[in-house]
Image (cartoon, rainbow, N blue to C red):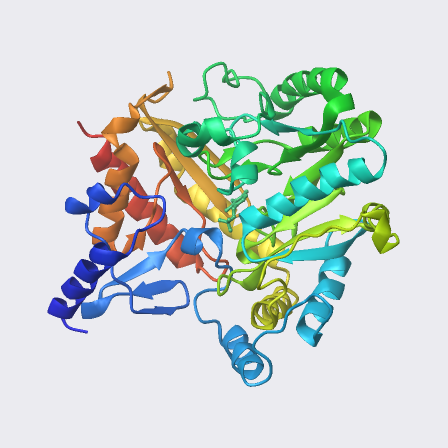
Length: 457
Ligand SMILES: *Cc1c(COP(=O)(O)O)cnc(C)c1O
């Protein structure tokens, strides 16, 4: 594609495509990046420009773009069965995928309800939890508890239990009101956050007391607590330790409230274990998965639950207890095949250990930033590393959002061929697991340069 046709593509995009999560006016000065091919961890634009995909195509990609095994299984499936509705019918990919997910997910999770994006899987978890209580004679359990800094998606139910104002505020009059409890985020930028000196575990235990109080007060009317285990990704890669999840799981059982683990972003080894719940040895009542589920190729999500919850819906039709939720493409054979191919690759080596090693290397490569006057915090969990920029690093006074310092790092990255899309003042890395150690070092170098220049004035 020539330079002219690349420019034409951008122009045509701006004429008709409403891009997600974007103030479209920004594209008057911020160039839209055309991409025509992907291979491994790299995205290629016209004119041989290439970008290292350090955010894994919005956290979906695990093994690089167009992984040969996924591509070949998809081609086979395309020649076999494209789609069949899943009500009254079934097919091999959905059966095999459900068996395998039941096997690899924690504890007794064994029943799979499919949707085609993560937000819809969260809707299923919320509806199923409340409906379980209705079917069990407790229809008054209508509320949900969510953590501050949470993000669970964009549909109205999922958005309702997300406390990130940036995405939520414009719609707040339309939304259910969750009970928001201050979360265990161990960053130091949050007002009233972890005091520098206090350990993550002590901070999490202290914060848990607020959750315990909320459960004591609201358990009778609460269906479920929903959390993103270990990393609240969308609100700035905020991290917290497994002890909170452990305490929460025990407390939910004690109070008769479901636990929903939204592992849409952190599942499939991202945190250095296959599922983040494994760090705390916790089995939730519902687990939502998406993003990495298809290795970053096709949209698919699933909400898993256990046999006990399933049985509360299992009755004669006339009882009216069935879960009458569907999407046209529920359990699509092609997307399920992408997930099966992804699970094949996941079984090929010890990815969790590999992810932990790469994460450590990246954290180490960024260590000089700990002395940077405009870096407030650097943190890592598995292959997620985040750096908070601040006006005054140690005092952690954040830059005004309008200064868009993170965006300057992004712009610098693009000039060096690295895609580092920030979250406000947080510059983060979430690269595919096939990133080489040398690429890790290079990404760190590009980010350090970008941070120097973005904070120089
Ligand atoms: C991305 C995300 C979602 C929403 O998934 P979509 O497929 O974008 O609808 C929900 N929860 C978490 C934790 C996510 O990161």
